[in-house]
Amino acid sequence: MKIAVLGTGGGARAHIAKLTELGHEVHVGTRDPKATLARTEPDMMGTPPLGPWLAEHPNIELHTFADAAAHGDLAINGIDGRNAVAALSAAAEQLAGKTLVDYAVPYVYNPDIERPWPTPWGVNPILDPCDSDSLGEQIQRALPDTKVVKAFVTQEQETVVNPKAIGGGAHTMFLAGEDAGAKQQVTDLLKSYGWSDILDLGPLVAARGMEMYAHMHGAVGFALGFGTHFGIKVVR
Image 1 (cartoon, helix red, strand yellow):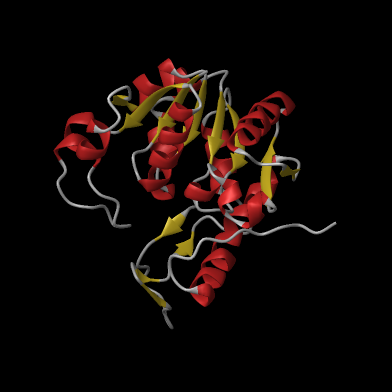
Image 2 (image 1 turned 90 degrees about the vertical axis):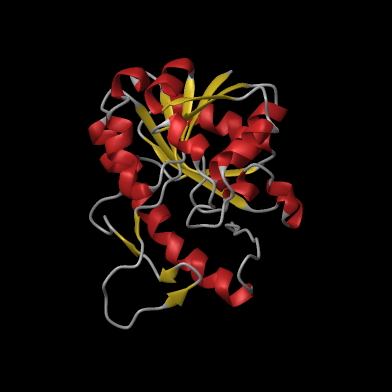
């Protein structure tokens, strides 16, 4: 397939490398390719600059978000949650009729709140929207002609592309969306990544629970030790 990966952070790079390994034609999108390639400092999550990484992957093409989306038959959203709706809206025409897998979490980093919970990146982030809406639903409303599927969001992306790295792969991946065909596309992609336990949560409103789970995932991660990768499993 031709797949657009929108975003250049650590999670996006995990997908880019895996998709290339699987033989897909990958097109990477960023807001400003020249500015992205000119960066020399790590991002807020400690991910190294893209330029040297891209030099090690010469078959990968870097585009604007819209140009990458135009090249892809399917797109994966790795844009940070605060900027995702605006960035994707600018590529709405190029994403029309296509499946968009969204794994973004609508985090607000370093919020001005009482009783903060310190983390390596500052105060524990809060979710906006939360409870009564979700980022996945916001993206679907902004892009009514795109088939949005919320998935990948309850794991670190390095685990999404390599589930067998934890417990032999015996853990659960969730997805939700309004279009059955789009969800089957994402299911097929997940199976190619190595997932065997994939649970369809139904309509896109289930994205609210997946996004809010990010706080629980963070809490478990800190309990296990920062940087520890783990999975969760639904036991029937």
